[in-house]
Length: 494
Image (cartoon, rainbow, N blue to C red):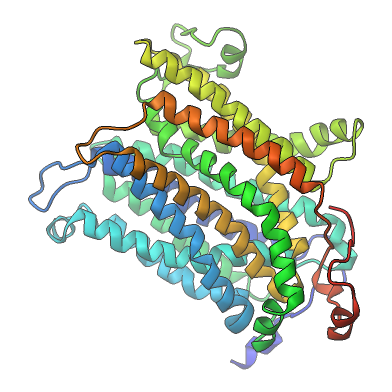
């Protein structure tokens, strides 16, 4: 344990990127490969592949598969509350991430053995519950800490690189998910591989992520836990008001995550199953000029679960596009604050669902529209994501007091959990006992579209009243400064 005290506990006084950054980015890319690869096939596995204990095909109703997928994702983004307490109060971010990554690996291992003879004998539904439960626990330790651990590497001397770092951090997330969301659906539907490989490869990726993170331990800044001081600050008047002020923004963002979750692996995927899945090599040109065009030979036929791959591909394109082109252009018209970026992103998310509602109308009319239309929806949605999600990560870190970084990140992740839980509850309400639905698919998508636009309008009004301040590890105010400063200091406008 003596070596533990040799780790750096404060950011180095450098003007370049911190030395621990490559290990954090590599770890995040591999972990996101594992998570999104597994998630990309989860709904399809439950709706089409799951067996009973006799080995006979016993798939879930699609709405039931929707519901359980949303509940699982809700758990992944709810448990970070407990991970944040471990990290900020007891173990520190590094040891929390490392220890619970092992639990994460065992969750993937359980899923990989779901379709073995003994896995079928136990029950594939039972194996799914156990495996997904461990993944929830592992993610609960990892998710609130990783992005906070990124920010901990920076101090005053290189804080100008923090925004760029969060962009690259988000880039790594989508680089990993891009590859896995192509590979895992193909493995699942290929009879030579099937569920064992489709769930097993993400498990291998999670093991690699754990090893990579451990390898960078001497390069990273290990901010020590605050102990009881963490609880005192969190539940002090200053801490509670800070959390309430940030939560005022987050409550609107949960609706964005509700709609985003529908586009990545669940509702949009099953809609894609009813569409023409042939895509030419230049789908973006087809979207702009002839969405129903089918090229003769120059293209490919997608699996429905692979359509969501458009999201990580596009986010890789949009990250530099928004940072170096779109944001500077908008800033020439009016100052572009983080909250204004988020507001624009919310409106774009609603616009993407207008496309989905139109597609559903075509399907209900007996037509089979080209999947290029759904790709147009992904273009609009992903542009909104680049403005909401990346900005939200930086906003969450900088607005959090230094001893509460993981906790505020957990609060940010709670917006994802709440969004997923909300959609799960809507799906549960929509499904009648006899298996019929209260809403048509057209009404279902219309409801969320209207909700998104309504929330975006209210967010614009509320955000006008938000005033915040920026906290970095090297800018930690003393207890005397906290005690004497105005609680509702306007600080730096956000």
